[in-house]
Length: 294
Image 1 (cartoon, rainbow, N blue to C red):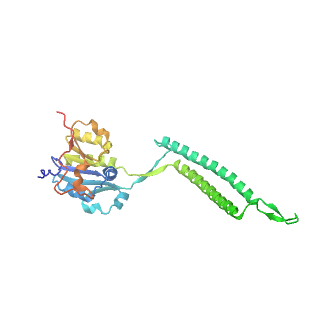
Image 2 (image 1 turned 135 degrees about the vertical axis):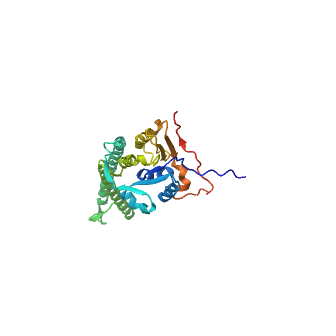
Image 3 (image 1 turned 120 degrees about the horizontal axis):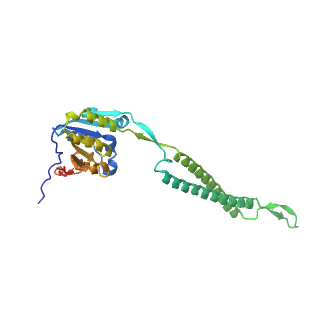
């Protein structure tokens, strides 16, 4: 006999609700979730709540252009801006120790290559000298008629093959050292990484709309929003933070009341690009709730 069908997961909302989706943060959740959120399914799921009004979707222009669908047509209120590239200096950041160790390894490889190249040079010189050796060729009366190599034809083939192999190895070692030099040069240069944070824009929009909602759902585990959540709670608002496992800021650990923490895995059956979860199964209503202090 099969067990009872679990109740579908639903947020407990008590009034008009604003939804904030920090897509730059949410998109990276796939690295830990091993499944991806479909923004269209997410919109449809959120639209099933009569309490939810505005759904603000924050995304860089570049990322927005890479999405398969124009989400303005889906129904989100899109908040976008041009991203920028910021330098990450590997020499001056927390990568310094790792980079130093890598440089030491690369320097060791170059020294080893140079030592091998020196030995190859000595061996090549000996083979060249051997190939240049000649012995006098005497006739029957003891007169010198010319010269001949002091080795047989098969021996010469071996010498020639060895010489060609040494030349090839020496060339490859030199190329490798040049490549290592080039790698070390680039490691010493700043690395540019894309950046497009919406912390200020999200805080501004939530502040401006604070009179229009009682509940806020924010899709972002970024601990930078904990201060915003704290301010809203002090004004009598309820805040639901949707996050991915391992992507929840430690700042939320200090909250005692007014905030509800929801792992996004609870929503997988409704918002993932691909799911093979039976239609009669849901994640239940096990939202992580930090109880209010009375």
